[in-house]
Every structure is written in structure tokens, then in C-alpha cells.
Amino acid sequence: MQNNVLILDFGSQYTQLIARRVRELNIYSEIKPFNKLPKDLSEYKAVILSGSPSSVRSDNAPHPDLSEIKGKKPLLGICYGAQYLSHFNGGNVAPSATREYGRANLSFVKSGEEFLKGLGEGSQVWMSHSDTIKELPEGAIRLASTHDVENAAYKIDGEATYGIQFHPEVYHTTDGKKLLENFLVNIAGLKQDWTPDAFVETTVDELKAQIGDDKVILGLSGGVDSSVAAMLLHKAIGKHLHCIFVNNGLLRKNEFENVLDQYEHMGLNVKGVDASARFLDALKGESDPEKKRKIIGGVFIDVFDDEAHKVENAKWLAQGTIYPDRIESVSASGGPSAVIKSHHNVGGLPDYMKLKIVEPLKMLFKDEVRRVGASMGMSEAILGRHPFPGPGLGIRILGDITAEKVAILQEVDAIFIEGLKKWGLYDKVWQAGAMLLPVDSVGVMGDERTYEKCVALRAVESTDGMTADWVNLPYEFLQKTSNDIINKVKGVNRVVYDISSKPPATIEWE
Image (tube, rainbow, N blue to C red; front, side, top):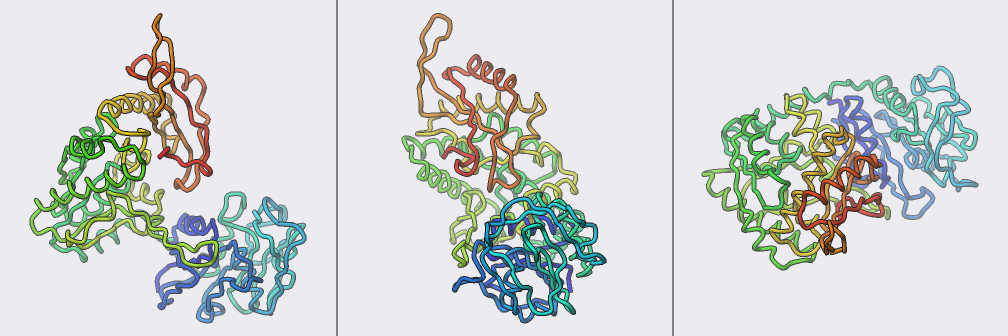
């Protein structure tokens, strides 16, 4: 039996956060939809039930069969999960008199309970529910209360089954990580041995066994995910890994040369392919965002396929796919919702390539990918890179794309990004970039009237890109950057700063 935690997803917006908090304890966790229970539960030592936008009182409430879990494995129900365990086991769940949402403080904590070790009266928790447990399930013992929620936490006597009506996975619950540790380590007995070093060792051994002496092709993007995937494969199979880095003509200024140089210093077997003209020709005259993406994706596949055929007897295609790209989530309506992303450089390759897929990062979150890269000694210059969209500057140039527009935006972007680095702001920003707007605005330079382009700068803070907030960059920095762009980039006479959050806006403009 392995040290694994199974998280059953009932559609909560916080489900991925539960998995990440568990992994921060160096314990491996997996998310599965509530209606797709694994047939073999032997590899899981503990189970967590997530929250949900659904009500247990609803006719179509998510209702999995837990007969092989409850009373047989350590089980923790969070919010909906706690209400589910109560409602279907003799308790009573009813609508709250008022919606219980936001910060609250524990007003009662049962003493001597391992589950609540380190938590005391006054400990802050985060509530998010409109139903509440009025009566506990059969055999339950109340463990904690808040001023408004009598049954904030409980356990089933004689079982390692626990329920809490607050969310320990969010930062607003100040002792949430400690509570999860109490449950997983002290009660379930899991070992905290899932570390980056252990992941590298295990994954390299698995890749050696899976691939053997076969040749593998990997399309590098210059980003964190594909770079770390390349290093893991390089450790496992060495020169049998053939990396291809395609210049689509929409990369940042000097990025093709700089990234190739970085990869070669890492000892990777990498080939650079400059297909700029091919991409720009295909994009000529097209301004529709979705059509631009499809054109870029289609040309990439053609270029990649041409190069892949030059590697004789290649059997595998490696991809830098990470866990959030693959998680099958549950929609708010309670049904399964496949949310598997397919970027042009990691998916959607045609069947005729006849290559088997290998994805060494498929169970890692982005922050874990960076930690794995650091454990292999990869440079901060690569691991600390901001995310960059697969279509590159193609979706940061609003409207049609020309070589002249690409050149303008590359210069603007270079000034912005280098400025962030010089001012010590780059590592405080999750993603930054510039957009070339399809707007000509009037200006004055010297004694002459100008009619030139407007650019928008964008910098956001985030953990995974699912939500993001704009960064309050210093006015002095924005002033200096604006002056530099207007003075140094011919064709631009106006700079604006985007202060929209996601949602409702997205990080990119197209």
C-alpha cells in the first residue's frame, strides 16, 4: 500500500487547492470525479471529500457509494463532504438562517483530540456554504463550533471518519495546514516522503523501464514545463532524446538564440528550426483570434512533423503536460466535465505520426515542476521564466500580423521585461507582457504631429493562471518604461497599463 491520498471532487472551486495543500506536506494526492471511483482502492491510505456548489438536499445531489471507504479508511469530509456524511448517515442538514460565508473563529474546541491538535479557541477558519448540519450523523461526536455554526467539526466514534464545515485548504483558515497534517500524518499514518528528489529518482527509473533504447522526440517551447520534462528524459535516456525548438517568428526579441544557447549549456540534444517566414506567410491578412491560433497550431504541426521524420526510428513523443491540464473536473451541475487543454506545442498532433506519448510531468502542479527542476540543478533563468502563450506574440498583436508589427512589439516587450528585471520586479510578477493594439492615436513629437500605435502593458500576480490580479507597479517604473518605449520604439506614441483582474478579464487580450 502506497502513501497516496484520494480526493473525490464534487465540483468545488477549491478541489485543486486541497491537492496542493496535501502535497505541500510531502504527501502524494490525486483528484478523481466523485462518479468515477477507482476500482482498486488499495493504493490509497486516506480519502478526502471536497466541497461542492450542490446541496445534499437536492434530488440530483452527488451521491457516490462510499461503502468500501467509510469505516475502512481514514476519511475527511470538507464542507459538502461533511454534510454528505451527515445527511446520508442519520444526520440532518438544513438551510442556514443566513449564508455562512467568509471568516469565522472557533468558539469551542474539544480538548484532547488528535485531529484538532494545535488548534484552539479563536483560531480563524473560512466558511463557504448555505446549508448547515443541524443534527450530527449516528455515532458522531462534536469536536468544534463557531459562533454561528454549532457543528463546525465532528468525528464518528469508532471510525477514523471526520467532517468539517470549513475549508482548511484556503489560506484564510490559519491552521488549515496543521489540521490536514493531523489527519493525514497523525491519524492516517501517511509518510511525508513525496519530495522533488524522490520524484526525480522514481520518474527517471520509470522512464528507463518504459522507453528502453527507443528514440524520443520532444518539442521544446523555452518554457518551464517542457524544459523540466526534457531534463528528466535526458537523465533517463541521454542522447536518445531528440529535442526540437521551433522559431515561429512570434517569440520575444532574441529568444530563439538565447534559449537555444541555454539548452545547449544544459547538455541537451537540441535542434533549432527557424520557420519564421512560414508562419508569417500563413498568417498574412488574418485578424480573427481563433483563426490565428489554428493557423499557428497547424503550421507548427507541419514543421514539427517535417523535423520528426528526420529522426530515424523515433518511437515516442514527449510532452510537457502538467496535472491541471489533465484533471477531469466536475461541473457545477454535478456531471463530469473534461477540462483537458490542448496547446499547439503539447497536443493535437495527427494520428499519422504514429508515436507513443510519454508525459513525465503529468501528475505535477506548476510550482512542483519548478521544485523538481531546482532539485536537478536547473538554472533560475529557466525555472523563473514567466509563462508565455503557445501562439506567442501572435495573440498579443490584436488584428492582423505583419513582420513590422512583430518587430515593434518585440522591442516594446524587451524594454518592459528588462525593466522589470532591473527594478527587481520580475520575480514578484507571475506573468507580464505587452499588447499591440489596433489603434492609431494622435501625438506630438518635437514640433511634429504623429499618428502612431498604442501599446498596453500587462502584469499580473497568480499561482496557477486560473485567477489573476493586476500588479500595482510603482508609478516611477511605469513612467520610466513609458518614456523608454515612446523614445526608443519607432511607431509607438502612446502606452497604457491594464488594470483588469481575471475574472472577468483574461490574462491575454486574445
